[in-house]
Image (cartoon, rainbow, N blue to C red; front, side):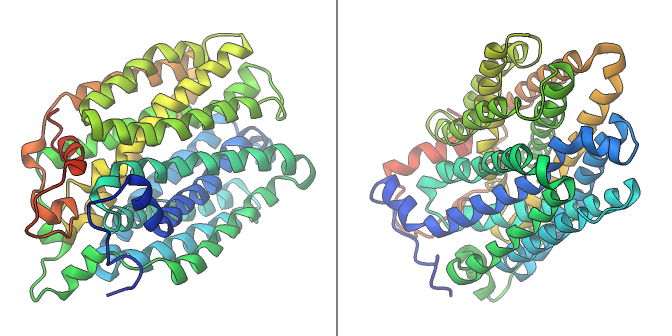
Amino acid sequence: MNDFAVNRPAQTGTHVEALRENWRIIFAATAGWALDAFDFTILLFLIPHLGKVFNVGLPAMAFVVTATGFAKVAGTIGWGFAADRFGRKVVFMAAVLWFSCAAGLSGLAWSYASFMAMRVLFGIGFGGEWTASVALLMETVPAKIRPLASGIMVAGYEFGYLLAALAFHFLFPVAGWRWMFFLGVLPALLTLFLRRNVGESPDWEREQQRGKRRSAREAFIFNPAVFQAWVFSAAINFMLWAVQVLYPTFLLTTQHLDSSQIFPFVIAYSVGSVIGKPLSGYSAARFGERRTICLFLGVVIPSTVLYTLVQSHFLLGVGAFCMGMFANGLFGIMPLYQSRRFPVEGRATGIGISYAMTSISVVAPYAIALVTPSLGLKFGMASFIAGGALLLIAISLFDTSRWMPRGEEAEGNVETGAMQSEAEAPLLAAGNATR
């Protein structure tokens, strides 16, 4: 057994103490997602420019994003099987190295076709990083801080998005588009920290020590809770891709801002997201997943007007903050939402398949680009965002808690014989989705 994470703190003490004792794995998972996000979102800022470089239109460039998303399907499922077979940590490291190298190679593209090929390779690693890091994080930290750790991890995406915005604002005008992708090699350095400071999942190691162990395929059971995880994962990503992917293009073309003027809106969106993601994790633990989902999305629908349909820069900024806090912030529940629906033996595979379902949503930017000539970009984005929010509310109304795994394997606990503490009660309420 490793020395980093197997000795989980007992379910006593404050949340702050538990976070401090588990800072290495939380930092690693958050940094991995942040650096993954940087390598992905830098393309979003470059879509108009690269369209001119490769002499293609907006639909063709949007299709690059779509193809990257479809590549996640192979990545999330394949890396998920690998993480269940060989361990969470080694697969986490391999996925980071993969997407870092693919991002750097994107800067060497000499044509639209070669650029597409590099981004497809990137997409394979992009999905694998999520699969392994979510399983490793949720199986390492104590149960009572999992909702908060879940929100903190996915808030890393905003730091990556912010780094991409900073690179676009300061480096792109002087260094050009190729260096934006060359910077994507730097995340490979995270593997050094992982190797020295993060241990293997204690739950996965415990399963390896058992005499008879089910394979990931045998452990995977399709039921309504799994199906709900699939469609919810697809729908939330559909909405968020409608929110994010063409937003820089919207600001540059519809609002007629230049590259230096879009930065404040990215800041507003990112700050809202950084607040919203841990908040959604806390809210899910305190009030239940379904109430949190309906509350957050109830704010998203009217915020769509401020995000896309007004001309005032101040109101656009308010809309960006609200969309970040409540639309993107809702993603903070996803690591816990997905992981609790699968037993340890097949958890990474289950998470991988669930995240692969999000690839269905990559049609959103391409569909918006197709309706833009008739509806306009702002109305196209608004309709897809509001429609996605309504779909998510409908999905969340179904209570599938009776089909969720029970016991310490399902929850990833290591306690035996002791009753659950009061500190854990909110987590179990959220997991059962009955409050």
